[in-house]
Image 1 (cartoon, one colour):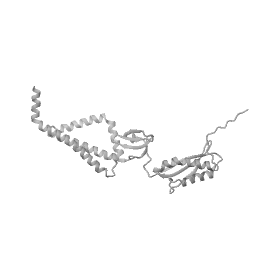
Image 2 (cartoon, helix red, strand yellow):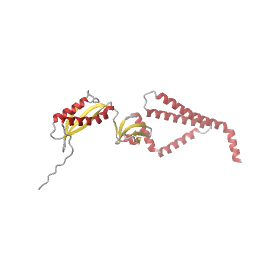
Image 3 (cartoon, rainbow, N blue to C red):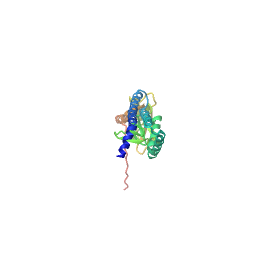
Image 4 (cartoon, helix red, strand yellow):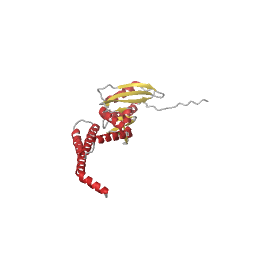
Length: 266
């Protein structure tokens, strides 16, 4: 019974302060989320990157909640100095336990600030190609061409090789086509150049390069290099081979395939 008397005495003495501290904490958490919601609405109207926006809102909410906890502790007449020391010790322990996560967090901030890519960019990260689906504080999410979602830790992204295919407005399209030995080389070059000049997605303001690039075992290879708007890259890459095949067939240009000559000795 003694313990109930002590609890009753504590409630009668500190009950109002305890209730006030609970109300302050609950109200402060609601206030933090409300401020974060309003700030997000405001920042969405700016050109601020989505990942940076999320980071700012999250940090603001955490700061408000920490301040609310300190205010609630002072209402209960608890030593805020001891609370700060406890928070510091807890932060150190959590930091040691989650050092990899904090490394990803730091790298996530660097990605957000330096902007090596944005949401929707077509990239290759450590050989994995896809579109940036989301940039988070700890991870980067890719959607591959096969519609597979891949989640990469920010440390892996920042410490690896990143190729951003969407960074610039125009791209060069490099292609190679082979013809048989004995073909009319002038005619081959004329056909390839004509297709490039007439292709609607090829930028005519940029130089069109068509030249013989190599003599291979059973064919001669021509390189075709044209420029296109970034969004037209794959349109040219996919349509050009069919146009070349049809033109070569019409003009009697032979497209070679690997052959082996076998000689039998009597």
